[in-house]
Structures are given as structure tokens and as C-alpha cells.
Length: 105
Length: 462
Image 1 (cartoon, rainbow over the protein chains, first blue to last red):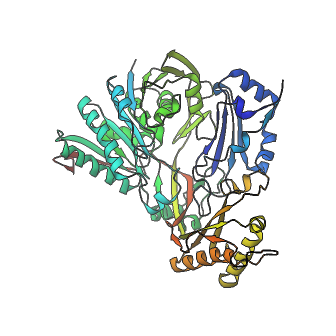
Image 2 (tube, rainbow over the protein chains, first blue to last red; image 1 turned 90 degrees about the vertical axis):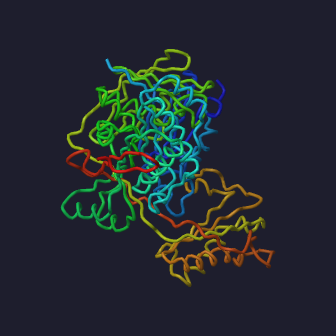
Image 3 (cartoon, each protein chain N blue to C red; image 1 turned 30 degrees about the vertical axis):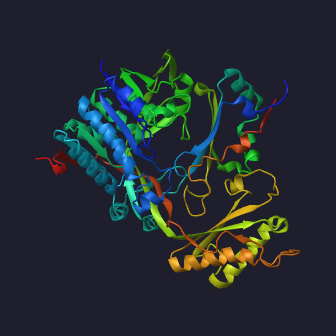
């Protein structure tokens, strides 16, 4: 199968505060087959996340394949709490864009 | 087997106004309770620290009016939690005043109102800490030492279902609660009806954000929950929305780190075995939650502290050479600040938000260093002293204009000032407390006032 970008397979790609110290990312698939394809490809495996976000792996605090929602979910620690001076995204809602172009075999 | 119907019109009352159409459709289903949460931490620490609401009072009044009139007409209790965005005592008193005003305007018959306060003085926390109470850190935070409390301007405790149950038990027609766990607002009447903690908190978790648990995406629309035994039936009230197993399950994971657990004071709901089934085109049944009780009761604390006064300036850059050397320009400007005020970050701070490069994601942004054709910079300065914040911001912005860079040809200024002025920002706050403390009873940190609303006033009940 030709590689496809994640944005063409997932129905929801979002980021949002999970409490004041974390941002959580959800990638949700309407089609079970798309979910399984991405899950099984490993492109969103926990070990692949740091490179997508220039991220120290230690900042990933939770990673979960959430089968009931056909979803992959991971959570990262903020460098400082949401809304502190210098903050760039108080709701954590615009951090997901790098996921769009992940190539899924 | 008890069966309880709850109508939830909005996930954050009056953050934007609720949509009345689907709410009225929901009221036709004869709910037993009308419940909405009115607060959040999402707006950052300033509303709590400065004790301000971010929702407009016009919208607060409008949402409360829509709920109150129907609640009184149907003769069913209305519960609102985390009053006025922050759930501070100010927020509770403000909502009580609005309820009394609305009651007078519509000449409502007298009714019972319970006001539940959740603010906890920092001095009280200090006393508890001095007496040996540990303020445990959440989400990887260290336990609070005295300096954390010193930095805290204002704090609230997050109530669980018990104070709301006490209010309902005393016959309250309207409950205005301070800071509350969202799911506790829904769990309280369900527990009062004799339902299990598992299904009660689980129903709350599924319903707390109203139409966010339905599809397609819409905010501020009503949903109806019917809770029977260990089953939760959630129905979208908007004609264009439906609750599906996918929409309900994906909401169960929304804005949380662990999609399988919902923590409340005294335990957590285990959602790992939940099953979602479509029962009609607009309704999904959710079952399978269990409750794991903790051996102690720990209540969450939220606290915010003032960091300093903020000043802002907007600067644009069009010269491609300056854009490519922007880091050097900023270093130069920071050097000039350091000459006058000492190193940036010591006693004051300056942030350059580079819109067009990586202002939104900063260190998380993997994008290659694209050369934007222009760059928008918001300069943010913060200092304990407002006059110094003003001066720091002016110098931080204007020194981009004077930056000494190699090979720059535009020697009449290396930046465009949108306007040579310094904007006064709201003071900067930080979240100081995201912690829990152990208490003897779930009521310990909360105060319930029983009032009678009559003739436009809320008076203490006899």
C-alpha cells in the first residue's frame, strides 16, 4: 500500500490541556481499519513521538492505545504551567500540527 | 431500580452563551435535574489569582435565566458548579445575586437556594502545613514547601459530591457551588437517588461537557442523560447531533492524561471495561464502570500567584537579512537589557513571541527554519514594579529597532514599530498549586449556606 499522510486517515487530530501541567494529544479514527493500519505501522509508537516534536522523551508522561475510541493518545509535560508569563498556548489547543504529515505505510 | 434524567445545556456556562433551542427540546423530556458546570482552569491562572470572571456577566445572567426559569417551571432542582469561572467566593456570591435578580424580575415564587463556598485562605493552608499536613504534588509536581504557599495569591479546594448532596438533602431547589469537580455535580443527585458511585461519577464524566460528547462537533448544545441501574444513556438534543459509541468513547478521553480513570476525592472511576452501544440514532448506552475507593480522602487544591505586571509591544520585521538574523537581534536587545537591569530572568523577564516562526509551539516546533517574508513579534515584559515593566518592555522592543547586525542595509531602523507605544497587559500569574491534601471528611473544606430567595433578595433560611 502506498504511504498516506496521517491527516487523510484520522478523523480527529487534536491537542488540549490535561490539567495545568500537561498537554494531551488525541488521534482518533472513524474507520477501524485506518486505526489498525496506523497502530500496526508503528509510526505513532511512543518511541516515535519525541522526533515529531523535538521532544526530550522524558517529557512524555502517558502513552495509550485506546481501543474503545479507535484512538492513540499521548501526553507531554509542559515546561511551565499553562498561562504562565511567556506562555504561547494557554489551552494547549494548537500543538498537534506536526502530526498531520506523518507518513503511514 | 432508580431512573434519573439529567439535562446538561453547556460544558462551561456562559463562556459563550448556551443554545436555547436544544435546551427547550431537552426540557420536553421532563428531566429530574438541570445541571451545568461554569468553571475551568483552561483560561490560565489569572482569573483565579486576580479573582476575576472571564465570562461576560450579560451571558452569565442569560444562561442562568434560561436554566432557572425552566427549573422552576418544571419544579426540578438546578445545580451549577464552579460559579463564575473560578469557583471562588466572589463567583458564588455573584451567581447568588444574579439568581435573586432574575427571580425578582420574573416574580418567581420563593425557593430554596444553597450556596457552597470552596475558597480556602492561604493562611489556612499555611496553618495546616505548619501543623504537619502534607500538601502532595499532583502530575509530577513536588509536594508544596512553604515557599509555594508564599507565592500563592488565592486558592480554592475542589469539592466532590458530598457538599452538593448535603444541599440537595436539605431541599435546595437551586445549588450554586464554588469550585467543584465537574463530574461531582452530576454524581451528587445520582448518589442521593441511591445509585452506585461507579455509575454516578461515570455519568458525570460523560455528561460534563454537554454536546462535546456528541457528533458532529458542536458546543453549547444540550444533552440528556438517563441513568438506570449501572447503565448510562446519553442522548443528543440538537436535531443535527447524535451520541455514538465513537463520540462518547472519544469524549471519555478528552482533556485527561489517562482515558481509563477519573479521579475524585476518595477514589477513582475505572473505565477500562466500559462498553458503548448505539441504542437509537441519537442515543448511546455506556456501561461497565467500576469505582475503586481510596483508603483516605484527598481533596484537590488549585492556587494561583501573582508573578508581576505585564507590558506588551508589537514589532514587525520585513528586512530578509534581519529576519534571518533575528536570534542575533534578540540577543543584542537582551544584552542591552542586561546592561541596565541585570541578566534577563533574574528579577524580571522578557519574552519575544515570534509569530511567523515558532510563537505557537516554540521548542516543540519541528518545522525547518522557514524564511517567512515578514515576522510579527510580540514583546512581553514582566516585573514586580509596573513602571519598571514599562521601561523593560520599551527597551526590549526598541532595541530590536536599533539592533546592530552585520550586513544590514536598512540603517534607519531594523524593525517596524506597529505603533511606538507600550500596551498595558493584565498582570501575570502562575499556577502555584496543583496539589491535594488529606482531610478527615469530604465536607471539611466547604461551607454550605442555606438561603431563601424571595422578593429579589437571598436571605439566610431560618
